[in-house]
Length: 112
View 1 (cartoon, rainbow, N blue to C red):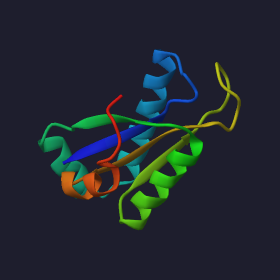
View 2: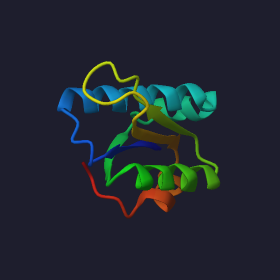
View 3: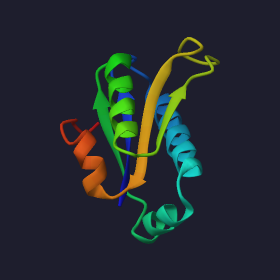
């Protein structure tokens, strides 16, 4: 069981902003997920893997691929109160779900 968080590299987010955006995505995806799936994920350590995507186009591609494969997704759009423009899509959480299901969508991406 794991969750992956995809972060856009073209935005060059400061580390604190990147972490905050990833946290938003993680929480949102968990809130959308089946309670039994979340319980199983929690019991196995709540693994979260952060991966790189180039830009918004690639982020949206993986969002659609994950949805097409029946995975829960949470696409985060920033409010624009700090370092980026309002409406900027920053990151995407996929899962929690089984490693195999997530790897079928994201195995070609590199670690952050």
